[in-house]
View 1 (spheres, rainbow, N blue to C red):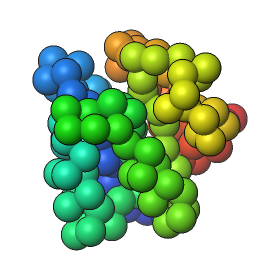
View 2: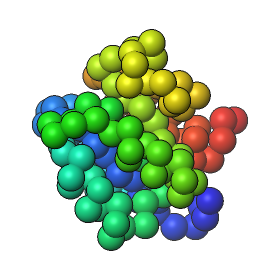
View 3: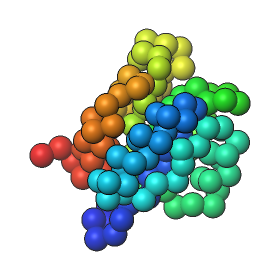
Length: 123
């Protein structure tokens, strides 16, 4: 990953307050952010038009779940953090339990740290 440019993060989140908090924390940490995005339709449209470097994915959005989005990110080699109200044992989690998983709402600082770990590797 090119560390000489600002990384673009896709943030999906159906709770506006959580999304705003996460967005502010990410910008403060030096990321550019697309989102918060509250629908799968908007997420898919953004992915079609944006070169995303990283993502924070809430699996359940207003118009459905993000399983296809997560598969698409995997195919593209885009690292992502799952930020979910459900646990890893939820049926939606099948196939994605190896991704970093934070319970929503997580402390924004913890999300930024986890995102940094997947972007730049743990120190």
